[in-house]
Image 1 (cartoon, rainbow, N blue to C red):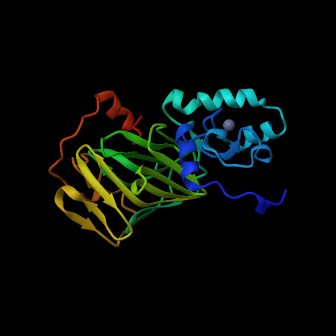
Image 2: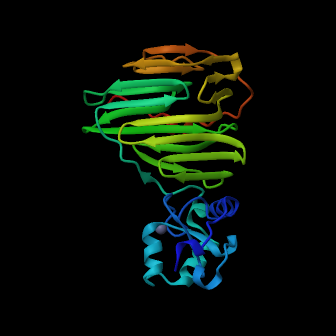
Image 3: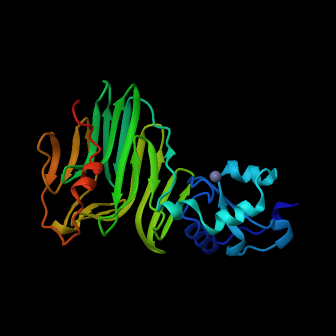
Amino acid sequence: MMKSDRPIIPAGIKREVRKRCGFGCVLCGKPLYDYDHIVDWSKVKEHKADNITLLCRLHHNEKTAKLLPIERVIKANKYPINLKRGKSTPHLLHYDGENCAAVLGPMEFTFELKLENDFMIPLIIDNVPIIQFRRVDDQLLLSLQIFDNDNNLSVQVIDNEIWYLAELWDVDLVGRELTVRYQLKDLLLRMRIEVPNKISIDRANFCRNGIKVDINDKVFFLSNNNTGFSDITYTNCLVGLALGDIPDALPYALSLGAERRPYIRHSKTEEATYSLVRKEE
Ligand SMILES: [Zn+2]
C-alpha cells in the first residue's frame, strides 16, 4: 500500500486514545508505543479513536505476526494495565558518564561526578530533591520528581527508571521529549531526556508544599515571593537552588524561603519515599 493513501492520525484522536489507554501499551504499560488499529487500517480505512489502541513495539510485532490474538488486544484495550495500577510501567533511561548537566529554563547546572557517590542536586524543595544526578557503581543515575499544583507526585525518575501517573490529563513522549498537560494549553511539564548525561526542563508549572514554581525559557519564577531567576550557570555546586525549608546538612548555592500557599501535607511515609538522597550507610 502506498503511504500517501493513509492520512496521519489527527492529534485530538491520538490524545483521546492515549488517555483512554493510560499513556502506555495496553498490555505491558510501557511508555514507548505505536498507535495500532485494532481492526486493520486496510479493512477500516479510517481513524476512529474506538478502533485505535496503544501497543509497544514488541506487542505490535506480535500482533502483526499473529502471535498475539486480536481478542487479547481487545480485552487489554478495555482494561489497560496502567489504568488498573494507576501508573505507567517503569522504563529505563540510558544515562551514563562522568559529567552531568541539568537545565531549568534559563538556569544551567553542571557537575563533574568523578568519585563514587558524588552527586549534584540542582533543585531541592523542603529538603526533598526535585532533581538529582549521582554516581554509583561507576554509573550515572538520574532521579527526578515532579509534583502537580495539588502536590501530587505526577512524574518520577528513580535511578534512571521513569514512570508517571496514569490519570493525568495528557502525557506524550515523542522521541526524547516528554510533555505533561493539565489541559490542552496548560502545561505541567515539558522536558527533554538528553541522554547520556543531561536533563532539560523547558517548561514547568507546579506547586510543591505550597511553593509555586513556574519555569519557561526566560525565567525560573517563584510566585510566592514574586522572584525570578534567569541566565545563571552553576558549576560543581552540590546543591544549586534550595526552596522552602533550608537543607540542614548540605551546602547550597542559593536559597529562598517562601510564604506558602495552603497545601495538603503528605504523610511521613510518603515524604520518606520522596527523599532521593541516599542515607549514609
Ligand atoms: Zn507492550
